[in-house]
Image (cartoon, rainbow, N blue to C red; front, side, top):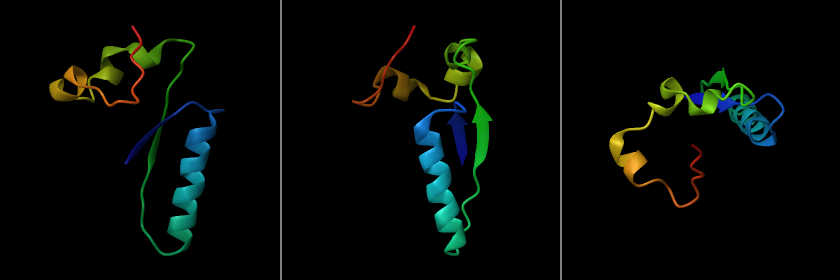
Length: 68
């Protein structure tokens, strides 16, 4: 599983703690952390946005925030 993170953001830290607890309990969850630099606008690059297919972009989730 890929986890896109901003280093000081609280939600990726929560995910890390959850995964650590599950792994300590015997689960085998492997997470690859990918740093996203918001100041450089990496969240808007084609490489970052291409991980969604056309149907996702045409109909984003109800809680999605779209930024141009």
